[in-house]
Length: 290
Ligand code: FVH
Image 1: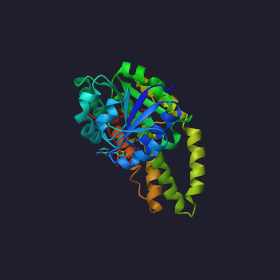
Image 2: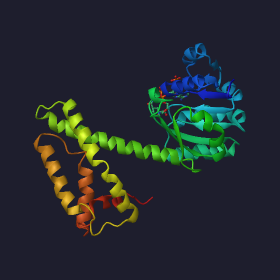
Image 3: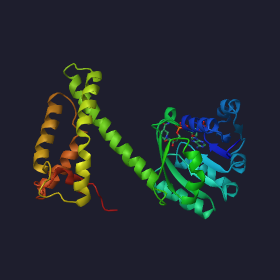
Image 4: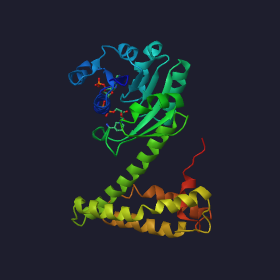
């Protein structure tokens, strides 16, 4: 027995994985894609294809949008506000927190029950144990869509501010890219001695695995904003260490551009008399006045 009809708007790699998973778990799916040919494999697998986005929305209880970006969302959904009125719209397109909030405000204006989402998974992971999706926005939308959304991966509701899922997504991706940047720096340094990246990958994985749990202690200090006297490594100590890393990179002919910003913040803390504070007080340098 069908559990309800879900419209999937956008059949790129991610939209296709979501449509397949919803079919597999017993949902009736209506699919729409700008390039209509992309609906064909889905129709063969049991989905209904809609010729227009309006038709896709009309025939669904819940519409899930998985387009490339925020601009595409508004370009395609604004003409179908009448069809979306009174329905649940889940937007899984990656956007910034403020873009998510803007879409939520637009949806509210048009009587659309809006939930924003962020996917912490690649298409192959959808429906698997490691798949995590973050949601924020209208609580009622979340309650209605939850059974379907839980088939895609673990579902975490962040709160009624529609920007929260995106904020967490962006924060986690930021930490990921900074970490991968660290690996690239390490691999570039080791390559100067003929050590292949495959070896450095193993070494970095072991090293980061050993030191990563330190962030929990850092978090306690940050939450108390209790940096002085330093419970851990001081600004002055870390500044010296960072200077060595920068010099070592440059001596091997490797740019230190990825390291320099942290050193600049440490320099500023020392220059303003905060050299004895814990080095993680760098976090206070990151807030810029808006
Ligand atoms: N793929 C991934 O690993 C990541 C994981 C984390 C979350 N992202 C986000 O998911 C959104 C969709 O990503 P995708 O992987 O499906 O992306 P593509 O395969 O490139 O497909 C893009 C779809 O968007 C359609 N599209 C693009 N621009 C427009 C537009 N102006 N109007 C209508 N549709 C548009 C495109 O249609 P077509 O090119 O086939 O006609 C595809 O359906 C994305 O936000 C990721 O950041 C995925």
